[in-house]
Image 1 (tube, rainbow, N blue to C red):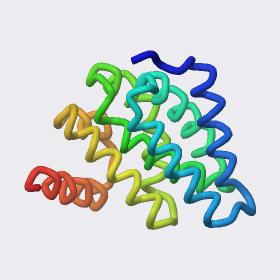
Image 2 (image 1 turned 90 degrees about the vertical axis):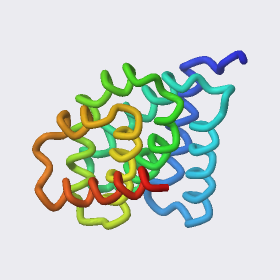
Image 3 (image 1 turned 60 degrees about the horizontal axis):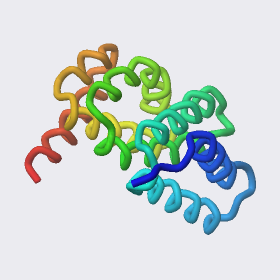
Image 4 (image 1 turned 45 degrees about the vertical axis):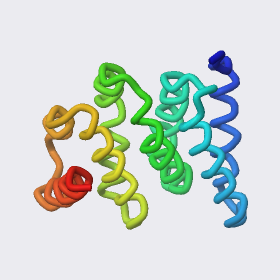
Amino acid sequence: PQHFQSSRINSTVEKLLECSKGTSSYEQVHAAERALENMAESKAIDPEQCMLALSKQLLTASTADENAAVTLLTLRALTKLIGRIPSQDISKALPSLKPALFASLNGGEVDMRKAAVFLIVEMHSRLGEDVMQELEGLTASQEKLVQIYINRRISR
């Protein structure tokens, strides 16, 4: 299938994530999240371009406390997208995602930590233990939590 242009993917991701900032209603945030998930799963959207756009937004958002909703939506969309990304592209992106993942795992919001764990689990399903080696520096409790969810995913 023909894919959308990368500039359109970038601007669409950016606009959808803007819906989660500030005083947006629950309905707006929920609709933006569903749209991002649809983009992540759409065969009409180039998965590598979508990952680049989401990663860029994640790195920007994770450095600002007021962007917690943006970070959360981005983590969730990346989790949906990982299954469509070639393993070597995930491996290349992982070092740049690491600071955002650590920030999310250490954040105060349960949903944020959970979204980061789910993203790590999805990456693990594609890359195996290489993910855990790359994420060296997780606390013992974070590693244990990730391992519990990895085991759950394996057993389903």
